[in-house]
Length: 246
Image (tube, rainbow, N blue to C red; front, side, top):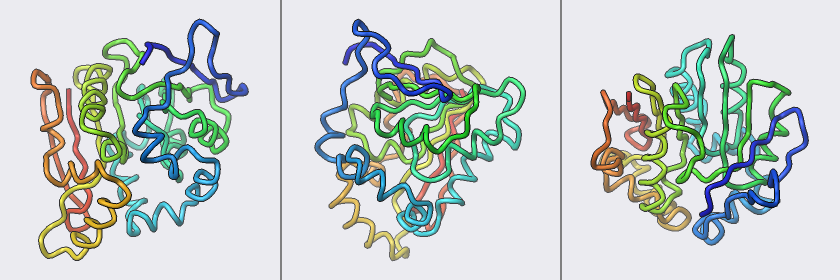
């Protein structure tokens, strides 16, 4: 993909791209083939942009997982936060509501339709910036953010893209900052969702079972440098939160 980025301020109509000499990144092939029905088709956005449906998809755990992510940022956010990929539901609005002082939220997504949908959900706020970028090739300088969030993104990516996304998240996060990852995890043997979700994921999300077979840490660059990695699980092990401190 060509190195390019389009920034869409919330208070202006979105424009893609910024200029003819800087075209937006192409929609990845895997996204078009595997996830068009969830993220790229207008009917998909109209269907899935319902708080109750997002909560149902996560078996009633959306708020719990959202709040566990936000807890890593604190009740008042006075730092620069990067959200990698848009999220259905009120995830981003909750982050924006906590911004205070010099706090800033940048959100990237490779799909214009997702950025448009998010833009419609957000109140005008000069501290919130939307960018059309690919998660595996970010166009921010090194150490740009205090915190980087990946909320149910990695399971949707092929291994090569997942590895590149994590490498980029590490690169743009400042030393001492956090990369917060929430995603699927191998459930405990006695959890009935272990058997239900295996079929669901195999059918609808072919890359997701990678996170059942391997720890997220195994997808980090071999030379990754960070101070700490902490993992917790929820809902009988079906979900995990991994916090990497740079």
